[in-house]
Amino acid sequence: MSRNPNQGPAGDATAGPRPDPDGVLAPPLRFGYGTNGLADLRLDDALGLLADLGYDGVGLTLDHMHLDPLAPDLAARTRRVAHRLDALGLGVTVETGARYVLDPRRKHGPSLLDPDPDDRARRVDLLVRAVRVAADLGAHAVHCFSGVLPAGTDEDTAWKRLAETLTPVLEAAAGAGVPLAVEPEPGHLLATLADFHRLRRALGDPEPLGLTLDIGHCQCLEPLPPADCVRDAAPWLRHVQIEDMRRGVHEHLPLGDGEIDFPPVLAALAATGYRGLTVVELPRHSHAGPHFAARSLPFLRRAAPAAAPAPPPPRPPPRPRSRPPARHLPGPRPTARRSLRHPRREQHPMTRPRVTPATPEADTTGDQASPRTRGDRAADGTAPAPTPPTELHRHLAERLEGAARAWLDRALEEAAAHPGTHGPISVWELRLAEAGRRCGLAHADAARVLILHAARADADTLARVYHQGTADERRAVLHALPHLVPGPDALPLVEDALRTNDTRLLAAAVGPYSARHLDAHAWRHAVLKCLFTGVAVDHVADLARRARGDGELARMLGDYAEERTAAGRTVPEDLHRVLALTESAPSAPATPTHGTDHPHGKES
Image (cartoon, rainbow, N blue to C red; front, side, top):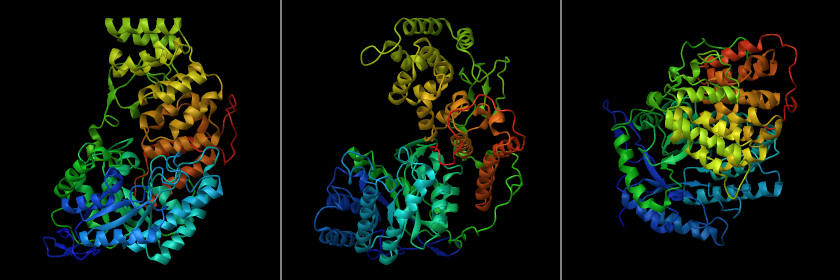
């Protein structure tokens, strides 16, 4: 088999430079494909396929079917793979995201954050093995991630565990001369670029520590467009994964099936001078892996700049400096939020103006209105937090057409006549699934809340509907909590929603139930999550009362503004709004909320 025509001598990441129009040479982008998207192929066949298709390299996930890191004779098997890569002219990155390589019952378990030190040691051992494999293969980086926050573990403890467990891995990486590229992963403790910098500072910015940047994750949850994320990450960039994705939804999609505008992203990547692999990451598409591998490379080559500009000097890390008082935020106050938004997102369903649904937090008027523009009351003066079910029913009945109104009446009658659970699923639960089709998307949330109320769903029933339901049904459960659960029994559902990056779910999670029952520590982090993900703080119920005189929240807001300003990013206008509320003197305490103000409470 012939050597990849896009590659120079094996392992030479700088072969084949292209001149820009001024004649300045810059390295081309080098594309690879991840073996976790070719899990149904033998490793040798997968490598041959990628070479035949013209890829420059491979993202090799160590797993039971591909260079099993726990099987005997690892060194000898690694040498054979190294020879195969050399013969095919493929570069390589070693990835460690296999789902069940350590435990057949726990996805990605055990992690670096597990409470059991023996379990953490197993993950450390896997990463050290990966470093040795990477050194033997001549890989340009080893990829890893933090893992999710374990139940019952507070965030501070988890960050300490992460730093402690990565230390021996970084020492091994330094000895092998291979960077350890940590990936921010949605839903994990280290989920964002800001989290990566927190880890970097906690470890003292060690030389072997680098970043894996997943372009889809940037689209999913970072406040800046993916191209800006690339530029901000450039000094620490050691590995890049790429796929398509939609804002707020962590689902890896084939290139062209999501919302990412790839030419600006690839142009920004080329401008950084990045010389590693950019690896297509489609782990849920192995059933058609060869098809998507064949489709992805031409897509990337069309989207890549025809001639990469000369790389600018890397941006130096922000210099440590003392933080200013939170009330004197650095930089000018922005006059608009559009500078933070990706041009392609302007018409995305999660950001464009839409009909305001008749939910417990908003009246249904049928007018086009952005969630950010809603005031404390709906257009007709009804209190939005929350609208009593009888009033919500009246509003909805006035707005539904005859067939939809008749369907809702029947659904409510069924729920009232047969509450609780009957068999695997109750008839009223089927009506939850039908609500969008029967009543229209603008009214579906309100209809679902009314059905749950008519069924007199208790905390256990709501938890079952939430965990088994769609995102729309989960959102309805969150809206229904203040009507159906008087105490804190449903807080686990709120905490689960606050761990997601679905912005509509987050908006529902910070409603009246959270205002009543979240402890101060969790509530503060919920407010920060809204700021970070772009959820308007108008959604945060009882914001003025809970923020009033909260010095700790003011400190956290100041720290966040400081980090954004140091990175050259805009400070959200909503942050200034919340900060102004904290400057007011605290009022007399209202009904006590559940929990305590202990700084090590359960993280959101």
